[in-house]
Image (cartoon, rainbow, N blue to C red; front, side):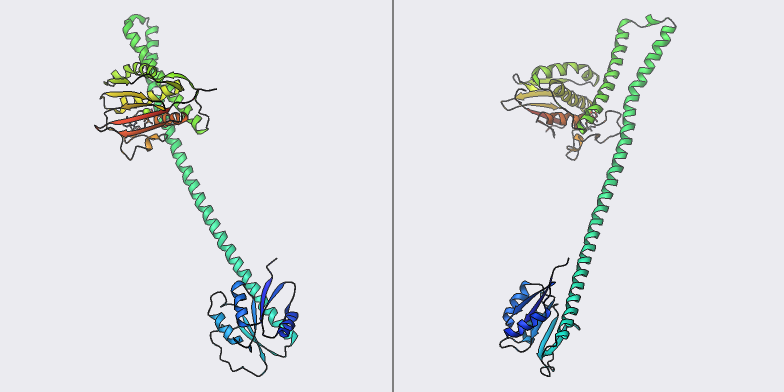
Length: 396
Ligand SMILES: Nc1ncnc2c1ncn2[C@@H]1O[C@H](COP(=O)(O)OP(=O)(O)OP(=O)(O)O)[C@@H](O)[C@H]1O
Ligand SMILES: [Mg+2]
């Protein structure tokens, strides 16, 4: 149900106002009355009228003067006006600035039917205008919504495309990463099968056997790590990555990890030094912290150009900080944040190493400890990764 139409009647004589009101009043209208031009102006500024019926002859501001003022004001310019005047008078008044149809005349004595029909026409016009306006607004609103939907759709499509591209790249990366060690293992087993068939088990001395088995072991370990990484990513994505706090001696942990990686360091022709300032025991997830350190050290060996790698730890009341510093090409400012994204690899994406998951997982693990993992450039070149771990309260 549309709002009730507002009508304004202006006349200096109360009995005229009463009479006019009685003629034009009905349930779907509100009639406002003003006894002077000034009073009318105040009402005009406050309300949105469908029509103003002005007595021409009034003391003070007369009907025409009021109409002039209405034309000069944006808010009232478009209100249709009906002048009421004594028949035969003021008809030669040259009224300027009126749109055709926006003004009309009624003559005293008022003919009730005439008044009613004129008012009805103007009210109907006003309603129509309001309705059109509403439709225009609704249309505009619909257009805006459509545009927003289209934008969202485009974005979703782009996301989907990106996701598909990522999935394809990911599958080919995983395939490649698994294929290489599996190939080697396959060749080894083929060779051994042949030797067994030919009764040549004793052809290699025990040291050579040991080495071969150790190599197999490394290949298998790296495949397990890869699969574990992928499992971690899906845990992170589904919000299921959790840490289990236990009493952890960070110094000992570091010594052990550096020891475990010494072989890999030798292979990379690189020395890892370790500097631990004091003991730092605290509640952390030892297994997960080890994972982070291994990731950082593996990276330092991979990307550190065979130059020395320095691991250091310092701790205070609040937190423990572990830094891993290498002397490779370092990480550019532009890459510094991106390398913590999943599947984000450095400049040379075609280097057949890694999926670009290590730092992503490591940062998530640091954050699961309410800590941080950041990278900076070392003053003498190379990269410095800092893992800051706040001391957490004992689990209950
Ligand atoms: N110490 C470093 N020096 C220079 N660049 C580094 C260093 N560590 C990481 N990066 C860059 O950051 C990228 C992401 O590292 P991240 O450990 O996440 O993945 P990755 O080593 O490529 O593969 P993954 O760790 O999954 O086996 C690397 O590809 C490399 O370009
Ligand atoms: Mg890595």
